[in-house]
Amino acid sequence: MVMYLASTGSSLDAFDAGPDIGQMTQPPRSGVKASIREGRWWGCDCDVFGPRGVELERSLDLLESLRDHSAICLLITVPDHPGDGVATFEQFDDDLMALIGFGFPLAYVLQDGCETLPIPEGASAVFLGGTDPWREQWAATLLTRAKRAGLHRHVGRVNGARRSRALGPLNAQSVDGTYFQFAEATKKSVRRVNGWMQGAVPLLTLE
Image (cartoon, rainbow, N blue to C red):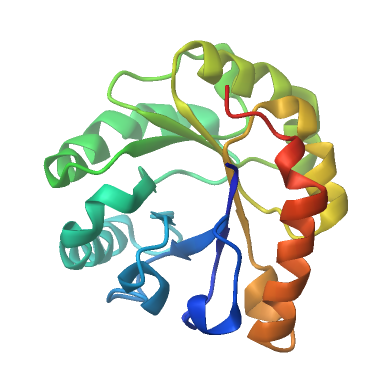
């Protein structure tokens, strides 16, 4: 099963979301979302846009609140540098040490320039970030490499059926996007994403 991780605080059970729709959370929005308490698969994107020390501390606070739900966690991203694969790689080990003690599956974020670098030790998943032109060029290669390494493969910024279908050859196992944040109502969003999952995203392979 391929998971779509929705960025919403609403109960997905209440809107009859399919079993392949889970929850994506992110600091500084702390606390356990309703869908995680309902037992849905979830992930956490610990990206860093503010002062690094402050943002990492917020990530640690959120992960502490989620410890009891580790069994249904797909991935926690190790903080990255958007668009800069070299800086993300160089920072990975330091942030890994801060996060590894929680016992969550940790994801290395693939950013522009990482195609020349190895996937760092300690990662149990990869998260495809990066700019759109770079993703189009390198996504298939990098996700195939991650598959061969036995890592979970996640793709960010999936907000429509067309992009879902385009992911077919990429060996992704879960995806997320901001669609739920900007759609008019959660019920309508759930209905549309249920359709994507039934007609498009299941083309992705779990093997």
